[in-house]
Image (tube, rainbow, N blue to C red; front, side, top):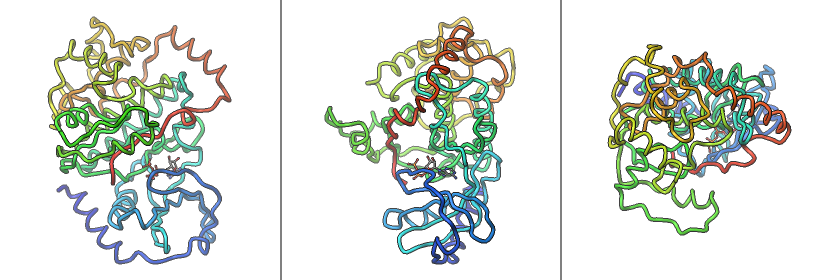
Length: 378
Ligand SMILES: Nc1ncnc2c1ncn2[C@@H]1O[C@H](COP(=O)(O)OP(=O)(O)OP(=O)(O)O)[C@@H](O)[C@H]1O
């Protein structure tokens, strides 16, 4: 147990004793719904006396354990000190139906609101987000925590041009090295090692065809009997997929399963260049420090993976580092910083995407067309 996780446990113990009942409307003017997730809703509110805008996160008591509420609150309060992590504001209370805590509010929605289907967002904007997320994740990892739920709707915007974004939703955060049942879920963000664990676990049952996506995901959300160690490489993988989604408005694959043709193609290509993805759950320092410019073009001579042909060698190296199916060799978020600054999208594709973006303005964002991913329990 790291010093940070020990401190987190102690803080949960202390705040459990001081959590008081309170009437939301007595202290806050609730303005609007900011968003809803699988575990609760988040409202924009203003403190009646101080006038401070904040996000109030409501967790239904019937489906949330006090400990998981306190962990998310204290983690956000004391460890999310990086400017690109969403910090709690020192207000936590209970109502007859909910546990509630106050958090800094992202007033411009989340990344799902600005990624346009099939065209993504501007490259500059994307690189700004990646840079901030690399810093935020690196901070969390340095404290010994792993986010485990990187996806567009967990990145909140503090301005419309993504100059300041904040990673939020710490409900899935666990200390590095914690043993957890590996859960595979149908989502492009789920790691290949989770799929391998599923393959090794006969407790998974196949779900009949023909279900609608969301229902199917829920049914598939089963705990595996394969226990694995929580590792930061999970966040690196999801950051790679998220970056692809920001640049293109689509995902490189629908899921990391052997049933998914596009993922299979990627894996075949990767195995051809780097060797098979046969290692499961051990984190190792990446080879090289990732900062040597000469390394960036090391795969120039390899044919590019089918999904990545529209990217420059610099971007391909970034993806190849984060989207390494072998968790032990996967790059760290901080290594991603060395790939920023140059062009990521090939000139011809950039022009096409810009044209398409102009045409699609007003047609809405990726939120409208993508299902919400199923995932494991807290
Ligand atoms: N601090 C915040 N500022 C602005 N919007 C927020 C904030 N927190 C949450 N939201 C909005 O509310 C939505 C749901 O919040 P959050 O993801 O934290 O809830 P959850 O129940 O944990 O969801 P999930 O199903 O993703 O686990 C987010 O996608 C986002 O749009």
